[in-house]
Length: 171
Image (cartoon, rainbow, N blue to C red; front, top):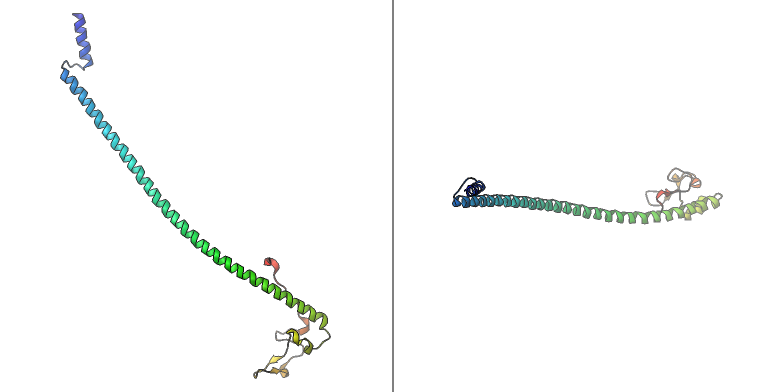
């Protein structure tokens, strides 16, 4: 009998002290139910984490889309300004080349007048564009008000200096 009592005790100790088989089924069902509730709660938390992650990614997409749109707008404005400045630069470069050519021509004329015109009178250099006579009210030259060898700008016709261009931005 000792063996049967030890069997009884071992079975009762493994069942938590219950001898009733229906109690052990209830205990197993209770464990299953608790485990199922725990799994449901864990799945709910997992879905909430996943939804929060999706919401965060959606917000990040919206923010990056706005940033991208602003960058594209800024790039468009900058490109338009660049094209405008490039066009202005082309015009200024062409004007600079034209003015440099004109300056070179004027310097050649001044050099020619200074080298050949020192002994000639005013009438002989009129064809070069140097005329120190003033135009009167009636549109004709007024030789009475003319100062001897002085042009309209107060300098002598014979002491013209070469016109120098600033060659910093020449080419």
